[in-house]
Image 1 (cartoon, helix red, strand yellow):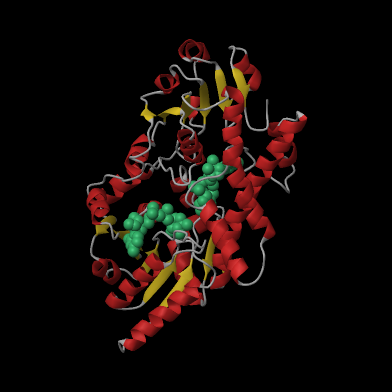
Image 2: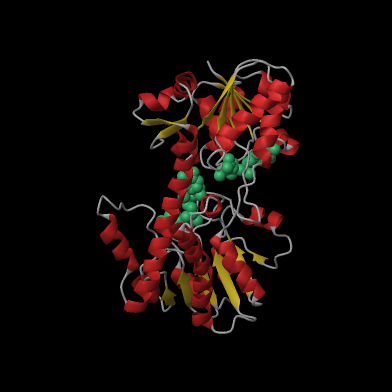
Length: 439
Ligand code: UDX
Ligand code: UDX
């Protein structure tokens, strides 16, 4: 049985740790945030992620999943150490590697035998090699001859289906410099590999680049369809059918062609910006990457313009926003396009009522100064509203009672930023309706 340590028990670290424990490994998770470890030790999750609670509870019970505040314990008791700390973006668009290097320093301090260090955080190309060099220098400086390997093993987990994605990966990418380390990684993922998940073994740099390229391509699909949506609106075409019409071509594919208020979440903007930054630093202007970001920025203004077109001056208007999570199935609001629209509405002195099935607590905690009316359900949020904005496509918003809604609102205006409804259906209840790229 492999003993695995996870440094950074956030979204990726916790999902990775819990899934590996469920697959039979012994996993110990360390986090710099002691409060988080206290909470997790009691089996309470600081985040909402489907299926994760079940895995964590069971794995704690059968002692395959443990938590520690002591980095020494985490480093000493495992041969395989995953680094899953956050890698935020600096003001200059570069990726902040402070936490990664902090983890490496911790490993150097407590190393007590061969370690395979798995870089899972999304990091600029060259970071794996940098980790290796830094660790070697630190060990040499203290006269330590212990051997280690560094591999890059990017994650492709989508929040809201991260557990499913881990078990049913499309592929496993292992960036390694030698066969020994790559083989250990193959053992870690042996269950998935046995089920037919393809493995791609590359060098360190290629694995790191694959992660950035994958997220950039997915973000490009979204920005592309959002641009098509803008054009469709001008020429009375239906972007939903355009997406289907092109997506059925197997060379294009149907996924990630849903128009909306722009992509959010902790990864897409951060990773596209970081890759654009890396590229620019090397003297190459990344035209596509810059455009992906520019279109996504414009999308907030386009959504705001839709609201203004429908209700006029925003000052003192009541706007009901349904959904603040960056997508359904999560309470994560990082880079949420809904939140970007809400901020602009508040700036323009609209009165905003908000309901989200999972993310209101996180919103309250992270944005205490934002003046909003927090509501218990979609209907209280819509009461006396001049405009209802469906901003996150939670399943419970797909079945709204429009008869009831019509009696509650001040003006029957429904802006469906996720194209959840057929326009004719909403209009049949006497609402003004607008989607993104459909009318
Ligand atoms: C991960 C990352 O690995 C990132 O590179 C990738 O692009 C997206 O997924 P995520 O899991 O979303 O990030 O981050 P977060 O939920 O913030 O978790 C990071 C955890 O690391 C936090 O719990 C934080 O307390 C912890 N941490 C941070 C440490 O344990 N040590 C540190 O030095 C810094
Ligand atoms: C993403 C990647 O999908 C995952 O592989 C990577 O490892 C982490 O980053 P995540 O950010 O959790 O995952 O969510 P994802 O499902 O990719 O959605 C990101 C954003 O794009 C959301 O705001 C979503 O609403 C938006 N989106 C997605 C669209 O607007 N249209 C689409 O067709 C798909």
